[in-house]
Image (tube, rainbow, N blue to C red; front, side, top):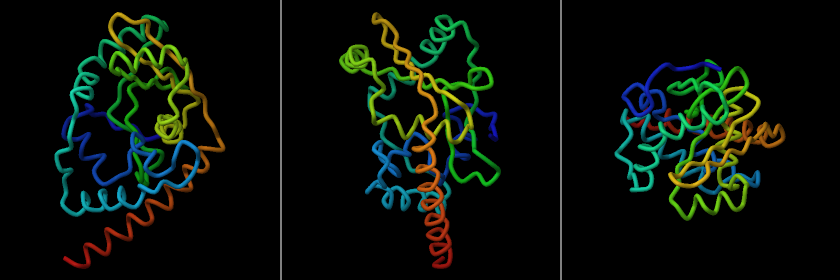
Length: 202
């Protein structure tokens, strides 16, 4: 794993992620069920465009997304207290020096773990607590973080003020990770070819 020491949400972080598939959107490449996503081509075109223009156009942030960002530090501190661990923050990471795809975990735990923090709305938080399961939609993101980092597990941590926090440990699914790696390699090859074509047109 190659770590990038920067602050998430600042200029260097955006620069490192520019035009690269990110684990938060791996579900647009491989579905939670392990099938090629129909959204992959559209996502590839978006990233190719970013590579050419050199920046990411402003993306919409809902009130829930902004609220989650504001609460993340409090949730991280609570996770540390509950689990008696230290969370080490990084900007983002790459699997190797090819830097084809990128992950931005919410923290590293020791030598083997990660934490992914969610601060959903009240009804969603209650739903998570009652189900005691990680929603399938997060499988590509979580397994993608494990693929990129080479780590063994990631704690899915859901927090909402006034409710009990929820921690669910997710371990590596090597079968899914192998599928994801194959899809990412194919996706990145198509992305590189598309960028070359666009540059030739200029």
